[in-house]
Image 1 (spheres, rainbow, N blue to C red):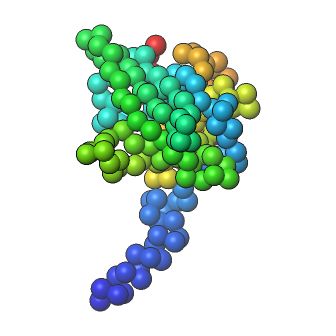
Image 2: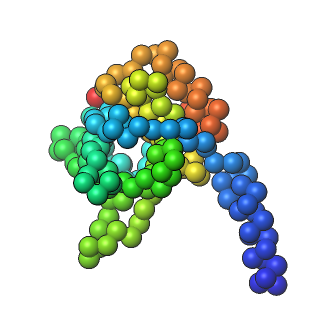
Length: 176
């Protein structure tokens, strides 16, 4: 019985049902990390528990470290005006595209135990916007190099999200 259950689970995973019956989103073909690093403003996100206290001014600052990993500093402003920061690292998982990364914001006794997916599933030709998602579509962010984004660009991003299997209605706008 256990072997049969394991076979059923393996078939389910290989058929994409691990992501609710749908294939995961498709990362972009290639990301030039030197162009990608820098300051990004969060335009919208799927609400999540780790950003629950953020009410405005959410940004992400990326820089390439000497070891090839990417330093990540996320910051936001809370309801009482406090600036909250989270420092972590990202590592590239797919060296061909540089579009599939893992991020970590938690260290225990010098070890980084919990890594989360960070897939770049949309990217402006000029690196002026980025769409970040996860294989299960539980998380998603729209990032921009500026705190505001043109309505027509945002509409095309929402169309891209829809094409990637996301519901744009799940995203809430970020105040700046």
